[in-house]
Image 1 (cartoon, rainbow, N blue to C red):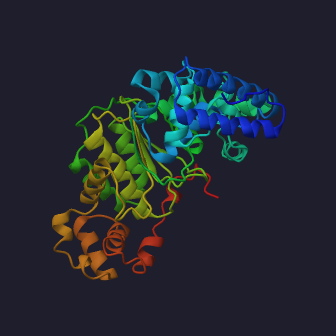
Image 2 (image 1 turned 180 degrees about the vertical axis):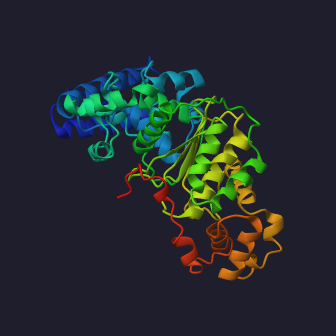
Image 3 (image 1 turned 60 degrees about the horizontal axis):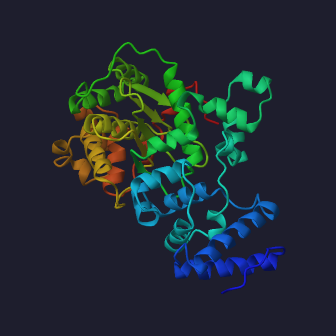
Length: 404
């Protein structure tokens, strides 16, 4: 039998971790001598960590969720390690503690250190707010995410965040809804920033009075094309926002947070009045109209699907593997902007000239920047038509936002 002793020093601790790894690899019967050793060793390691290094280790449940995000795993993927769907749900919600068998499986299968997994989870009410990035919270403050009353009371970070997320419950509840989501985002998108931005958009939408209830079928490709033709109007973007509201759809403009590169999102937390959020990350009219059409396409095509959120970062999407739903939204958005029947026979498809762009735009009754953007994207001719694209600005239509 391996010798187990009280852990008093860092050296003792390292030796205990090595022994723990060795015992886990043997997968002993819990009732055997080695199984009893494993249980005792886990207790000794946990006691030492609580006394000596309580702040250095992440919460085990957060560590599992982080690894899931890193590896693109769904809760159902953890069944192999934890035993059943119900057990996975209980573990992730904090209703059940990890057994030593689960620790072994997660360490070997997902590479999460046992010293992290055996740490006691923090399920206090404020635990999910304590580890929020101070720089993100500072940016939220500067952007007016927190109300004036909170500042006057000089609330702590935890209290500021709790009050901010109150309309949706908590970030954890939002993350739970994300399980029914479609992401077209890059790996480095910060989930805390995404939760904050989403909540800000929802809070803005809750302040808007809507007299119409949206129902599936209210909008279609014809409505989308009619909307795009507003692009030639002097105040086309604001007219589009009004037209959507008349259909029960709330369009919110909210600048992206620095830890995301989000362009737009469709939020279906309230299907009576769906929300489309745009960041206007690029101050270009063509980007606005394509992103808007893409999000509207999700409503036309996917409103009745089992999905609550569609998040889209549209940079460098060509050639990237995307979901079938995102591909469908891309195709419908493109058709709404410039019908394929017109594009295929237009000189603009072959010749990246100002004259060709102007001719097709006049024929379709849309802003020339939309055609210029199509020419640049389809032919990957990014050096052409810069003046047509870059001179057509969008943020000027939404002066209530701070664009500095």
